[in-house]
Structure formats: C-alpha cells, structure tokens
Amino acid sequence: MLDNTIINVRDLNLWYGGTQALRNITMPVADRKVTSLIGPSGCGKSTLIRCFNRMNDLVTGCRIEGSITFHDKEIYGQEADAVDIRMHIGMVFQKPNPFPKSIYENIAYGPRVHGIKDRSELNRIVESSLRKAALWEEVKSRLYESALGLSGGQQQRLCIARTLAVNPEIILMDEPCSALDPIATAKIEDLIEELKREYCVVIVTHSMSQAARVSDYTAFMYLGDLIEFGDTRQIFENPKKELTENYITGRFG
Image (cartoon, rainbow, N blue to C red; front, side, top):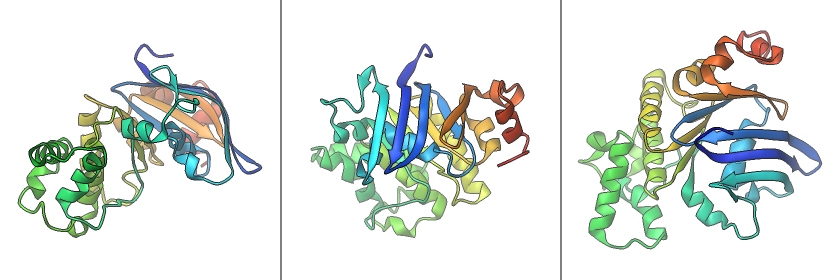
C-alpha cells in the first residue's frame, strides 16, 4: 500500500455472467496523484475503474468478489450507498456527453440534485468548476447557450467541470481523449496535471505516450490480470515483467 492510498483493491474478481473479466486484482490508488491503466483492448481496464464507483451495478449478470475500500470503507459493503459513492468518485467517459441543456445548467444540475437551490451559490459553483476545468474564459459570455454548440474538446472539459461541481475526491477518466484531436488532447493533459493538485485522478488510456506523460503510477493489464503496477517511470524504463516489456516495446498489443 502507498503512503497516501485513497482506494485499495484486494483480490478483486469480476464476472459478466459466466465470463470472468477481472482476476485477483490487487493494487493501491494514491490520493492527489494520477494513476494510468494501460493494456490492449478488452483487458479489463474500463471494467476495473467502473468498479470504483459501482457503475458495474448497472450491468445485468455482473458479480464481484474481493475488496475495494475508499478511505478504508468497503465500497461494496452492506452500508455503502452507491449514490453517495458516485458523488465522491466521479466519472468522465470516452465520448463527451453534455446534457442537451445550457452550459450553466450542465454544471448546476448535479448540485441541484444534491439540494443546492440558492442562485448565488450555484453561480459560484458554476464559475469555480469551469475555472478548474480551464473552460471559464472560453464560455463565460455564453453560459446560457446550448452546451451542444461547444467543440468536442470543450465539451469534454465541460463534462470534467460537471464532475467537479459535486465536489468529488476522485475523478475517473475512461479514455477521455480518444475522440479528440491533438490540440484538444494536449489541453486535457494539461488539465489533468492541474487537477491532481486537488484530486485523485485515474485514467484509462490506450496511449502509452499519454500514460508516460501524465501519470505518476501505471498499471499494466492483460486479459483480466494485473501484470504489473508501479511508478510510471519504472514501468516504462525498467519493467519487472517480460509481458510488460513486450507490450511497451510494441511486440504485441
């Protein structure tokens, strides 16, 4: 376990029906650091991060064994509240998915659901969230226009701002740049670097160069197994497992 572990995964197994998708996963996730999950398609990366905020609860036939703790409390414990967990552990998806509402209402939606009605407080949250997502200066004059009019990169930063609006501790990002051009990708990567000052960030990425650029820790997964986890520099420069080295050097995957 790392000194600043916020999520701890121990002996995690997951099945979709009769198919096992994760096998005996054990790894820590550090607070105020970026952890990247890398590996070929279908290796279990997205399945793993969806366990962290119980998104897999929504999948029929999904069964989980093992332990995931958040601040030493079981995420799948009997007393755990999935809605509360998702407020503390937010998710940004592969493709931007803004609501068909104004930019302002996209950000204000979550706080309203959680009981904040005061307009001045909502205004503060909207501005603060957009600033943290490095989007405020680009949209401050068009807050009441449709979010669907934003570019793809802006929409993705809006979705990050929407996640920040409910004051999470952890931000999960499932291939957040896969639908973006290189300029928008660079902005998201710069944003990730800023966000880790306040938040734990876990990112699934197919791009090994992106993982090397943005993350402090890297987990390499293959066919549902966690092959290797460690400091990102060590994983890329001195992997301990031959399978990791083969993947990083492009010999397969």
